[in-house]
Length: 171
Image (cartoon, rainbow, N blue to C red; front, side, top):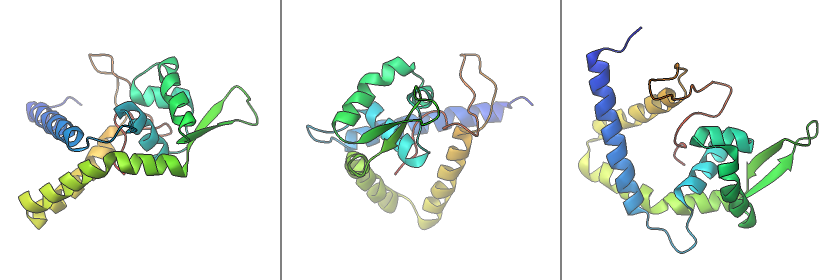
């Protein structure tokens, strides 16, 4: 089943809206000297909202090689935001677990952006429109985990038994 021209136009509008909103949220969450990088925050959010994941699974979600995530995982572990636990059956395998300190760091990281967004939603949109956005947020999460063949740019397929592709879910 091929996408229609209307589907393509919707996809373009959605990408543009998500991109603009994402940029604005980053601008509204200045953080402090100890704030998380975008990648570190995404890793923490994926672990928090998914299940304990291996570094390889987390790297796949972020579109990276596992080795590229090593520095971020080491930093998060040094900060006490994650712990890595060896698998009892396969000692080569590690699972990444978020700690209470990691949850707190993630909440702090998104606090200002979430506050700005909540105020903008309340000031700009009607209760009905805010309800539509709640529904749209759920639909976007469904899209993020949909199983689709690789696209022309060589994108990957998300699998239901793996962590979803792309950005981490909100807190």
